[in-house]
Structure formats: C-alpha cells, structure tokens
Length: 305
Length: 265
Ligand SMILES: Cc1cc2nc3c(=O)[nH]c(=O)nc-3n(C[C@H](O)[C@H](O)[C@H](O)COP(=O)(O)O)c2cc1C
Ligand code: FES
Image (tube, rainbow over all chains, first blue to last red; front, side, top):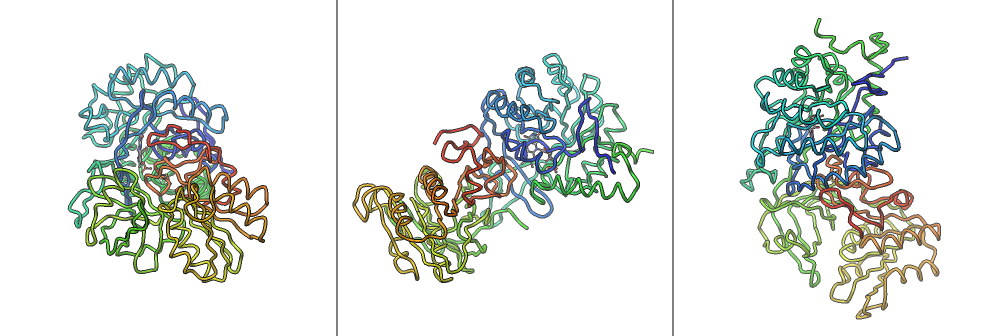
C-alpha cells in the first residue's frame, strides 16, 4: 500500500493533486465534480469583491504544446462566491483553497475578510495574474515591496492560512518568495502563467486572442515551473503548491522532488479531461510501488541533497 | 491537435427565412449533427454555432440575426473570411431502422435536418415536427420535405401554417398514435423541458441538446458547467440522454451568464 496523504498548512489532503485556480471551478458543483474525478483538493476560480467582466472570445487557444489564455478573470463577485463555495464546503468532499484577486491592496483585505466568513481551508492570494496588467499596471507579484504589502493586509483580515500565488515573469522568483514569507505568508503557490505571449493569424493579419496577449500554460512551461519551485524551496521554509505543465503522475512526482508538497493541475484537464486526477493518482502509486516509496511525503525536495 | 481558429472563405450565403441565413464555409472539420463549432470574427468576438451540415468537403451553419455578433456576420459577403475551430461536444446518435420523432424549435431545425438526412438514409423512419411563432420564421421546410423516410409536421403559434399551437401538442399526438423508439429535440429550453418530462412519463428514450454559455468549447473555462452534475456541457453535452438531463438542476430553470451568475429562464 502506498500512502499518498499529505499535510499542508495543517490540512489533510488524501492525495497531493489539487485543481489549479481558473480551470472549471466556477460553481460549487463543478468543484465537487473535479473531486469525484480524483483530485485531493480544489482551488476556486479567483474571486473578486465585485462583479468583474472578462474579455471577449477567443479567450483560450491551445495546441499539443501549450495553451494561451486571456479569460480576463470574469467573476460574479463575493456574494455568488460565498453561495457556491459555501455549498461545496457543506458537502465536505475535499479541502477547498479559495483563490482571491483584487486590483487594490485594500480590496484584497476586504475580499479576504468576506471569503473567510465561509471558512475555506486555505486562502490563495492571486497577485500574479497577467490579465489584470492593463488595468492596474504591473502585477503586485513583480515587486517584493508590493507583494509583501498585500500579504500584510490580508494577514490582518483573516485567521486562515494563506498561500501566495507567484508570477514566473520576474527576474528572481526566490526573492519574491522570501519577501512574502517574511510578511507572514503560510505557503507559496507557483507558478502562474508565463509571458504573456501572442499568437497571430497571418491570413487575418491579427492576434488571435481578443485581448491580443495571454498567459502561457501547459506542457511547454513545465521545466520553468519545476525550476521555479526548486529555487523557492531553497529560499524559504514554508510549503509550496507546485503548479505548471503537470500532465502525468510522473510530472507530479518531479514537481514534488523539486520541493512541492501539493501539486496544482490546470491545463492538463484540456489534454486528459477532468479524469486526469484519477489517472495521475494511479500513475503516482505505480511509480511509488516500483520504487519502494511507502509515503509520498518522503520525496518532497528529494533532489536537494 | 489544434484549438486555434483557422481562417476560411465563405463560399455561399442563402437567406432561409426573415431571420436566418445559411453560410457555407470552405472547410470540413468532420462535424456531426448536434456538435458545434466556434466562429470567429477578428476584433469582435467568437461564438458557438451548431453544425447544420458537413459533407466531408464543406460545412454549413444556419444562423439567426439576433445580436451584435450575428448582425456583423450577416454583413459578410461570399469570398469574405471568418475563423473557425471545432467541432466540439457530443452529437446525436441513433440506431439503424428505428422509428424516430424530432422536435425542432427555432434554428433547431438545422442540426435536426442534418441528423434526419443521415438517419433517413440509414433506414430510420422519422416524424419531423418543426415549430415557430409564425410561418415566416419556419426553417428548412422545403429541404425537410425532400428527405427520404421523413414525414414533416408543422406547427405555428399563430396558425399561419400547419397546426395552430405549440409543437409539443403535435408530439403528444404522435406519441399517442405511433410506436416511437426515440425522441430528439433541439430548440428553446422551456420546450425541451416539456419534451424531457413527456418522454420520461411515456418511458421513451430521448436525446436533448443542452446549450449553455460556451466560451472555450473544450472543458477548461468552466462557463458552461451544469448544476447537479457539475460537469461542463461542452464536453458531456451539448447532446445528452434524458437520463443525464434529469440529473441537471439548472435545466429548464436557469442559465449562467458570462460571469457565472444565475439568470432565470
Ligand atoms: C484558462 C486559465 C485560467 C486561469 N485562471 C486563473 C485564475 O483565475 N487565478 C489564478 O491564480 N490562476 C489562474 N490560471 C493559472 C493556473 O492556475 C496555473 O497557475 C497555470 O495555468 C499553470 O499551471 P498548468 O500548466 O497546470 O495550467 C489560469 C490558467 C488557465 C489556463
Ligand atoms: S465552454 Fe469552457 S468549459 Fe465548456
């Protein structure tokens, strides 16, 4: 028997694979659906204080190598989120990581306080979305000072453990990780999408995404994500949700060896369906069995010898 | 594997009725009846449309002019280009030689015509009910009449053509008088909700096209998830069996808008 249980910020996960923010996760029932497909936990789509409009279509394009998205974080706001997430929590099928987003530091505090009222297991602070770039200038995740300020504000307004979602689009992600750790973060989620990038339709002579640019995810970014997690693990003591390009159980194990305790899976749902969670769990168990690993927690940070 | 729109030429445009035009596009994506494709107008938007035909060489889409996107599309001329990706979702399925009844409301006649042509050639006998508010909004009547093994029934709310009243009444009548193996429906959800209930009461299997606000079409954005199952209808639908449809809590009740907010039907 292989034990895939992991403890993260004091919360028990029956396996380390969690749904990444922004994939399905719009309603309580869709989160439960992903748990039924085998996820050890789920992250909600990022919640805003007020209703937030997304971009026109096309918002997502993809091929066998990568996905490019500029969905624009559409959301119906805090009241709908409390309804839907509350419903999921009441059913109690798996731990919930509630992702929140805001354009202003003080709004982060307000959303954190409101979402904390329904008592999700963990709060994830999305300070790295490239899609809010145009409206608010540089994402908070790109400066040690801005990132730390958001964390301090949120910590004042909630007692829940918080994980800070970092952007890879910085010169030194480990430095940002250290800054948010010092500011009181309980965990790090890394990485958000890479870029942004642009795809052009040469017949139409125009970028394909309506937003022109979008964040890159999927298989192409896996090495970048693994390296980011490796660097962060070396720099901080708090645990990491390693996210980016994970498609298989073997990818998930690589991410854990780099230093992740939980592994986020998003774009893989495009390649293997929501069933990817059950499939990857099976693949992890097979590998553990062959390698004589009894507890998956043994392999966290294994490459850092 | 590519879910990036391809640009294709419009080969032909036919005005079907006062609201609907059929666009023939210079591409085949091997779409099946009930599946949909996303059509892209650069710098404006991209929207999902049911495949009205795909013969392995060209594809057709019958599109009503109802909003900013379809109005812009209606301005296009033969030779202009649009982008297309797909096909997405599950289509309708049938067994050879069965006796089927189709119930179409609005543009739903287009995908069901595509299905009727295939099923008719495969030896199915089809009772095809087309309904609309009035005669000038009926769709595909002449085409359906020409199909093999297909019997056309028309209903209009105002009685300007065929049976006066809802097409669901015609369905009830047919189910009383004929032995039907399977019911198929595509159209307004309130109508399909009634079909779902009627099929359940009479214990006849049904396939229903459940449309939600689709953005990506491939099960990622989550905009099209149904309540009850929580699964994305772009992957598990749009065509679902009545058994699956009866598990949905939102069907016939509400949809979700672009931001995921519930909107009553
Ligand atoms: C369509 C899409 C929407 C996303 N929306 C969010 C979001 O709302 N909040 C967030 O923190 N990250 C969001 N992300 C980033 C993912 O959570 C994840 O960090 C990234 O895609 C890398 O992992 P992956 O390759 O497994 O997808 C989104 C990604 C995609 C593809
Ligand atoms: S349209 Fe995006 S998940 Fe169905």
